Image 1 (tube, rainbow, N blue to C red):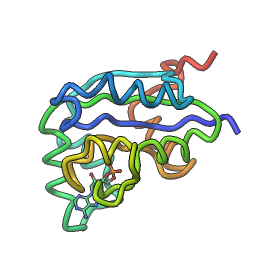
Image 2 (image 1 turned 90 degrees about the horizontal axis):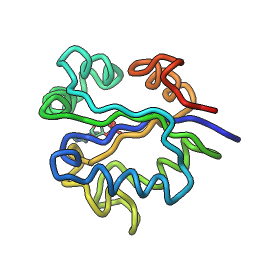
Image 3 (image 1 turned 135 degrees about the vertical axis):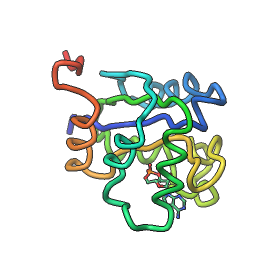
Image 4 (image 1 turned 180 degrees about the vertical axis):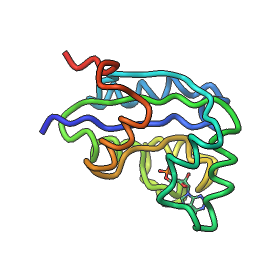
Amino acid sequence: MLETTFSIIKPDAVSRNLTGQIISRFEAQGLKVVASKMLQLTQAQAEGFYAEHKGRDFYEPLVAYMISGPIVVQVLAGENAIALNRQIMGATNPEKADMGTIRKDFALNMRENSVHGSDSPASAAREISYFFSQTELCLR
Ligand code: CMP
């Protein structure tokens, strides 16, 4: 099924100049960038994006980290894009991520884990619309 998913290249990866290498991995494995922008999140934007984690012990440090520097937000399209993106990223904890995944190769730790990707069609829809209007998606 042709799907779209939402991706973030996080501050730890952008600051280490890994943006191009990460996008190349998505492209090499069949995902197409159909929208992309670099931005600096505000505290309110980061809190809203991660609202489902509010109250967890990692929430406040996660928000502080996500506003520590610029990020790249993207919409990726392809066959089974949501699952494929998660496979390319690897497990949240880089110590548990499979060989050859982005997080295994680049993530610093469980928080500074280089990338985010939607975990379901409902999350993808919410997350895409959090950062992009429909007219910003180049789907044709
Ligand atoms: P992400 O896919 O963006 O979704 C939530 C983020 O919270 C996750 O990636 C990590 O950056 C962070 N995170 C999740 N669990 C933990 C944890 N146990 N400790 C620290 N950070 C975490």
